[in-house]
Image (cartoon, rainbow, N blue to C red; front, side):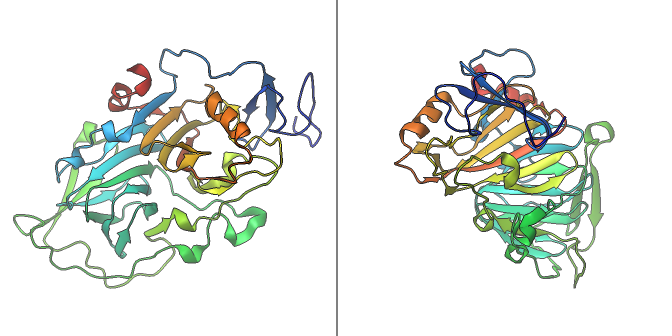
Length: 371
């Protein structure tokens, strides 16, 4: 039963996520921190376990994964995780695509971890840079032309990505729409060297490739020949530097306040630099939890946590129902250095999924916890 008045049993701190006095703060909550909640105060670290079997936490360095587009211009991204609502892929392209792509199963939302370049779309050209989110609507034709090696984390939904309801914050959550970069139409006639026979290949990206084989459309003209467009369904880029971070001085806020975009069963969040909580006794790091209803993917873009560098390119997967959280040593350091740090400088991209994710064989083979 949900109520403004919560039950309280045994030894508990007076304030939420504060003044723990040696206890370990463990949250058992429904609905991704927005539903019914139990805050459990333990004697010992709930992540101090040894796991075996499929539902175990995974840690993998993206630099150790080998997408085929990293070495072959005709290659594509590497599948990392999947369920019925989405696929999460890694691309490390360093040469222009000699073909066009069209994702026909759902919208595509990609994060640029490294590199700069040009994205050619039916709506016009879009420059991208590190820290950009790149949105491509379902069935939009596009082509990537990197300036140098570019690392993308790609989230392909089987539904539309949408901006979450703004709530009481209005149009300033999660971002000011005027900060989005929208392309101007620029019809392209010829791309010298794109194909050997002056034909234009469009590869349809769909899940049943293994069952029915890849689908290719061949045009005698460049498919990006658009003179103009209008409407509210279009490609865009948005940089994390322009994201509005919501903060509190007296309590570490739940991940849901950092929501950026969402699709059915898929929620994308930005954990970005912000002022640290300033009220004495407040826990400045996320509490232990097992995110009862969601799998969690975290991609470390960079930054640090109270003086501890965060490894760029690290990907973690925490299955729902399995405890995870910041290591105890980092928590102790945050308390000990409370007066030395007034900000937290992390840059982490998080993806929560309602359905359980299946790691790909490549991810499992490179799991740091198994080596």
